[in-house]
Structure formats: structure tokens, C-alpha cells
Amino acid sequence: MGIPEVPMSESRLRAALTDIGAINPFFVLAPERCTAIHPVSDLWNRPDLLAAEVTDVRDRLADSAAVPASGVEKRVAASLLYQGLATRVLCPVVGSLLCHGHGPDPTALYWSPSRTGPLSFALGSETALLSLGEGGLDEAAALVRVYALEGVLAPLGAALRAHVTVAPRLLWGNVASALAGAVTAVAAARPHRAGEARGLAERVLARAPLAGLGEFVPPQADGHPVFVRTTCCLYYRVPGGGTCGDCALSSSRAPTSGDAPR
Image (cartoon, rainbow, N blue to C red; front, side):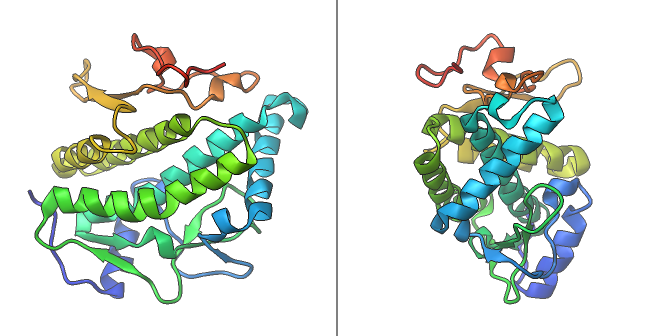
């Protein structure tokens, strides 16, 4: 496969992140830590900070729906927070590995609760790097599983479930959706990487914890494969909300037993 193999260096990483940051805002990482910032691990080691993030999302959803915060279920806010975080974690890692052969270690990122928009991440002062050797897509998939899924999203999901009652498969379904969204964006912006992007996603989706949570179905009229998940993020339960394009409720496939939205 054609993923570049390059020496690992901070300057190369920053050049890669500048390049993929043009794909869409989810691929952007701030180049330096700002004030009032926390390591990503504080999201699962500091229950007060995670609870504040859930509350922030709940308030934003309530404002957009013009209802009081009590009109938005806490588990819905937790689910959508998690999906947003999964997207922010996966996009720069997947994009930089696919397009440049190396990327940021998501376990070494930082974030700030003092902001005016959704939570996003920044590089640390001593950037930790992931770099591909000769393993191609299999190695890239392993890096995504170990560093993004196991290193960040697993402990984050466990902390979230300790705070809010939400099904673990629903949360992992959100990760599957975020991964599919990341590779789809890469394929659209960099068509010469489309095959590798889908190949990476299929390798990650084939193994736990994402196995059985979604798949790419045959191309539609535009010739592009479409991802369909087997769970639902619960956005439809926000007043005025609906279903997402990859939702099990929008397809002929039924949600997994036990994960069906209630």
C-alpha cells in the first residue's frame, strides 16, 4: 500500500497536521498548549471536569432546541459528547497516518475547558509521535486501536458510564461512526487515499471493540460506499432532532438487541 514511510520528527508532524487540518475543522489540532489546559487523561481521572463537559453539551443542545436543560436527557448529552470527542481524537490520527505516515499520539494531547466552542485538542510542548514502519495498513490499524481506542476512548467511555447510564455498545458505535466519518472525509479530500482510507477503517472495524458495530455497504448512485452503523447515538431524542445518515434507524438494518434507542 502507498502510505508514506518517513522518519519520525516533530517538524514533520506539524507539517502533516497543517496539511490535514485543511480537510475540515475536526482534523485541526492547536499547535501549542494554551493556558488553563489539562492532559487528555483528566477527562477520565477528574470526574468533575467530565461532568462539566456533559453539562455543557446538554445546555448547548437545550439552547439549540429552545427547551430547558431538563428537556434533554443526560445520557443523550453524554452520548453526543463522546461521539464528538471520538471524532476529534480519530480525525488527526487517522488523517496524518494515512496521508503522511506518522501522526500525534492521542494519549499525549491536551485540552482546555475555558473556551467558547466545543472541546478540541492541542499538542503538548513535547509532542509524542506515532510513526509507521513497514507494516502498512495493518500497522496503522494497530496504532489506531492501541493509542486512540484503548489509550483514550476506552477509559473515557468507562468514566462516562460511571457518571451517566449509557450502553457501552452505543458508545463504541459512536466510535465506529466517528472512524467512518474520518476516513470518508480523507477519501473525499484526497481521492488517491480513498482505497487506503477505507482499508484502514475496515481493519479497525473487524476487531473488538468495534466488531459488529457497522460496515460499509455497496456504493450508491454516486459510486461511493456508505457506512451504516448498528446502533444509534440518540440524537433523535433531542427535541427537534432526527437521525444521522449512518444511523441504524435510517436503514433496513435493525439496532443491536439491547442497544435500540428507548
